[in-house]
Length: 119
Image (cartoon, rainbow, N blue to C red; front, side, top):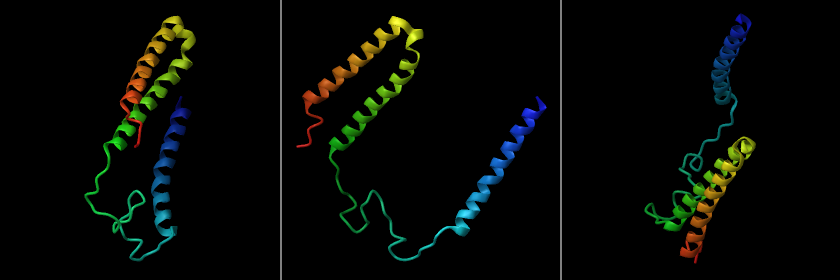
């Protein structure tokens, strides 16, 4: 038991020592380039001199992002279900079918509403 504690303490010490060492090494050994272009703000591939600050975006971008999150979360729920399907049995299978049908109904609804049309 004491050897496990020793190794855990040693690993914690090594991690605590490694983090500052790596931070110092990157500042000392890392490349440096100074200049006007390097110090300018840069975000999402658009430089600060292109376009106005109050540029408007379509709501469809945000709707698509929300839809992506919804269906991504569906995939997150399906993985543990697939792993434990044998223990869940038919009850778990029927619950997942109901969940997928509910999401399929939502997908059909947003397709009919034209949310995914970009024109």
